[in-house]
Every structure is written in structure tokens, then in C-alpha cells.
Image (cartoon, rainbow, N blue to C red; front, side, top):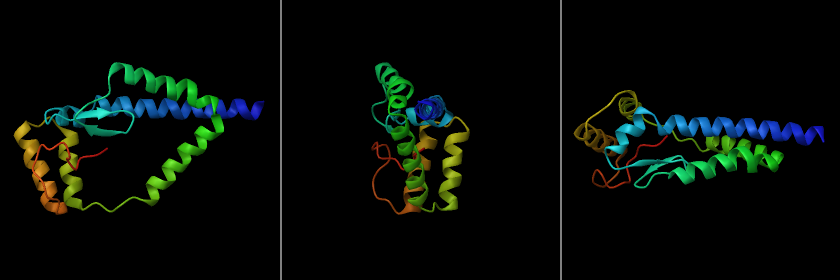
Length: 141
């Protein structure tokens, strides 16, 4: 029973960190800038999409992370570790110029025109086709 309770506590703490990170991203400067382009933070996926997370979605996420996931404690922990390790292994190198442009989006309020310019510059740098404001911007968290 002690081992199970330890798993519940660890899974709850992991859930708190995940929820804190999602809330931090939701209220970040980057989220405010991307909102000007019509993109909103999706807490379930951690991406910016045309439709954001509803208040009910935030409540469901909190219930999942803080109540339901800890019930399956060690499975939840293994899933979190697997996600972290696979993210590190599948990490692709990002050009320094793109890192600098992402930094500009995350560090200060920008106008919509500046955001469109940055988006187009990132697309040119990465060799991606497409027009700005398609909802398929190369900004990610």
C-alpha cells in the first residue's frame, strides 16, 4: 500500500507541474502575441490552434491531471517519463536564426504586422511554403 500511495503522490505532483506549465503558457506573452493572429493555446495538446481551450476544458484537464491520473499512479508516471524521453530523443535541431525569432515572439508585445513579418521570415528560413495567418504557423511551445 505504501508503494501505491507513493505513486499517487508522485503522479499528483507531476499533474501539478503539467497544469502549472499549461497555465503559464496560456497567460504568457507568446500566447498574447499569437492571439493577435487568431491562434489560441490548446491545453490538451500544448499547441496553438484557431480554437482554444474552453473553461470546461481547463476543468476537465485539472480533474484528469489531479484526480484521475493519480489513481493509475505508476502508469501515469511511466507515461510521463516515456513522453519526456521520447521528446528528447525526437528533438530536431533548430537554426539559431529561428531561435532568435521565437525569442522575439516570447519576450515582448508585438503588433500583428510584426508577427506576420516574423512568421514569414521563419517560413523562409525553414523553407516552408504557405502564406501567413493560415493557422499553420511554425510557432510551438
